Length: 161
Image 1 (cartoon, helix red, strand yellow):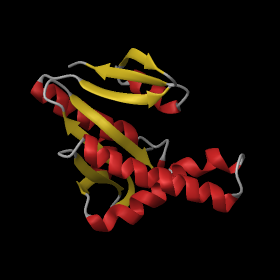
Image 2: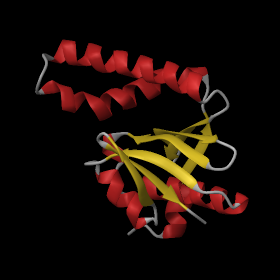
Image 3: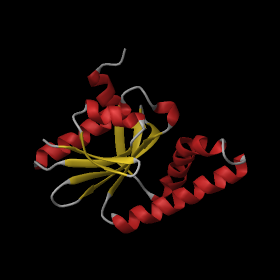
């Protein structure tokens, strides 16, 4: 059984570098490719998802030029990424993605609790956007986030210290 202390020690973060880009692409593919495989041949699905990753990377860089990009590590092994941005009156979780093999053991919860602590220290809300039918919505709600808007198939969510 993993305790909260064990988890907080086992989950580390480090600043991302250009050398992490291929790792981030692989995580994105592992996360998103399954939803396309039923509709497209594998090679075409991989091309579409790789293009989505490229567009997402460019979009995040343009929309959040001062965001913090970090590699999430579990027991010293890279398992995901987190991007957050100071938006002045609030903090924004731009992206949090873990490799599918690393989900369900508390890593995402630990990262979100750290972001909540950062938010609490500055007395500003923490905001994020989540796909409405994603299991992540349950995680966010269990951590005290509330839905503040529904835009298309996404929930805009907020946690207030």
